Length: 373
Image (cartoon, rainbow, N blue to C red):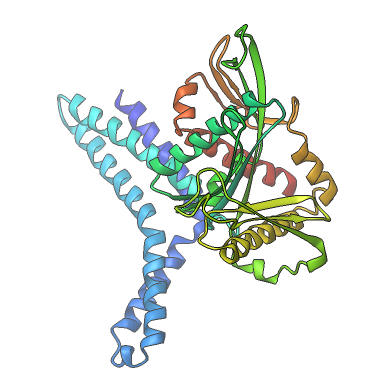
């Protein structure tokens, strides 16, 4: 029994070495030591701006190293427990404690692995997430509202700041569209895999015969980035519409015609904002979102043309989905890309879908490695 625990500990140690190796922790420790030596020098604070910059660098390096050092220390403590177990006549207690600690270390290592996959230039940016109901009237609108609730629950449970910047309610139920701004650690990096068509199968509450119904909604996710100021949009390429706000906006909703809708004529991209206090503020935010979307399209030019990308977004239909949500005749959520699935659909709809996020990030990393090879 103890030999098995020792083997597991060695496997975890090897995985730790594999994951932390590319991070050059030794080099970062050397940088931290050098910066700490500087802080002890006389006159360090004579130049407050320079001193502050060095302190920020030092703190950032320490913060990046600390989780990996903590895992290494915990593994060393497990090694001590295993040594004690081999010396004792009754080793079960030490074995049980070591096994429990290894399970906890594995969970921590899983989270650290995900952090290593979030290395994109905009992974740390706030996410602008847009939900659009597909064809199907009330049924599709209700499905879009269910996805909205799912993402709001996810943001809330993870301590993220979320704001509904635009929303168009359905004629009878649900929503036709909604745009969220989600701010928190690696918000865009974590949510980027939600981009695509989401397919629902259930017994429809809007069907008198209670028949099984398939509905679709699309989700688009782009990062809110600062370089959108570099994106130049000719005025002739934009159609501006002003209207009275409706839906879940701020306290000024329905009081003035301050909501703004921008349509980028060359691509057909439409962006709306109604949650700010004035028409000017709504237009400024909508312009920022539009530029972010155009920037994202520009980044993907090596994959497809703008027209093809726009066609993909219009095709909210069977065969184009990235994830299926089945309520009847059985319960299942399955990601078409990664193959990851669960029968606990209520957990997912309550915003607990981090396992799908993790699976996508690992799948994305594997896809990139294959292309490089």
